[in-house]
Image (tube, rainbow, N blue to C red; front, side):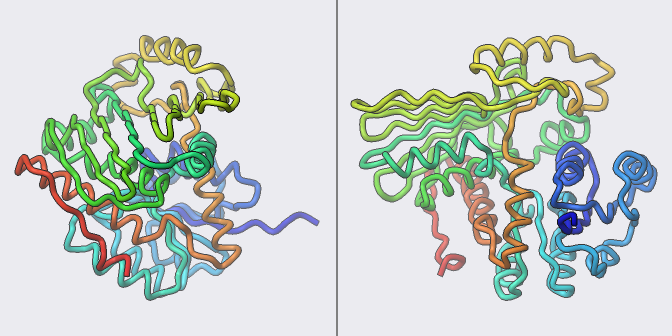
Length: 371
């Protein structure tokens, strides 16, 4: 007798969901794609042919009201979240929403009150903590971190090859990547250290290309180099943690290196793909493959701006975060990456923007959310 699968409805089937949440749900043997919901009916028809959900719809309440659906994944833009969260509470339906939690600070307190008081499992899509490499890094951090600790995180991409609507939003309308992208790293560092920052200071471009410093309790300090003025031919992300006269280094979710005096060197590699072909190599070998891919990007591909089928793709935990949420729903427990953690990451981003505007460090206080 086959194991019963949990039904999933996905609301918001744009580029990110199409490249991540939809195929990850499809390939998870414990999940069943029941419904896809979007306003773009032409796109829904293409997805229906590819993934064969039970149905597609433009009506999101139909998804929440469906008893065959055990959890809902929301991939809409972050300016449309409250109505979806209200439907989740109305129908007592577990809800996963992509990061960031929202775009307007005025919405945050109401969101926290709504979800904390509902008893409905709710998770924000900060995927990096669920990646295999970061899981191993946290175990090393918990085993070794002591006394003064410094963390450096580089997350630098290439705005030149973004989808046009995203490029126009950031470089034209000056929407902040501190909110859209760097919230990932704010959340990751909070999760890694088990702490919330007490102060933030930002220099750089403001809406894009910044250096952000964070002060934490327990003598922990962090610097984030966040930008999109680099090339995707070079690895986008790297973390270095220096503590207790040792170092942990994570290279683009492909290679982990860690060492302390008197202990064996830790050197571990993680799976990645180029197109559909799997690899597990040292990071420098993956770097060469990454440059080969970037060198071959065509103008026709740039017009679309999504490269999921050909690019070097590392495991940042997108599959694992959805499986983790499924486990939480099945066990009737609240996810660790909840509405409070989503709110904290957003607030750090807004205060980082304030710091850039004023040229001064800004103190942080999350007591109204964490009491």
